[in-house]
Image (cartoon, rainbow, N blue to C red):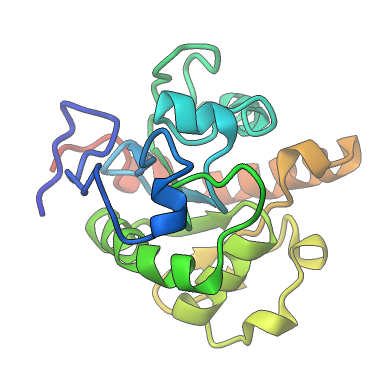
Length: 208
């Protein structure tokens, strides 16, 4: 599976007609795979597509999700948050599960069905920092990439901190729509301090 950076959307050519989950196939409009810079040092992981992302095919473009793009703009990782296809230098956006159900969260079986997509994206991109956006993404990364138990990690408590993982650092983020001004400032301060360690010069924006 090779990257195609000619496209920001689904650059690894993952199955856009996936039929692994019958219930989600019946409700989704789009299989929303990852989007962004394949040379990114920073991978942002949400739980599942919103209505807006399901329609556009681009992660975090729904009305309740798009505030993440404002945060990325504040740290120079998004050049135009209002664009239909925003440029994301040094950032890659993706989801735990790739299809939307309008009435419920994904089941454990559906999460397991999507794990190969996520693990492939992480392996191909090989980022330095994983940013789980919300509780479910934090639990998913904890199981696979840290020595901590998922049930011991609370995104509210770990928001704007760094967890040392197995080959990665993890910086949990509460869903932006749920953050207070103080919590957003805390994340931006911590994330900016992380950026100060010259991640921009090591790998971001390079071709593959």
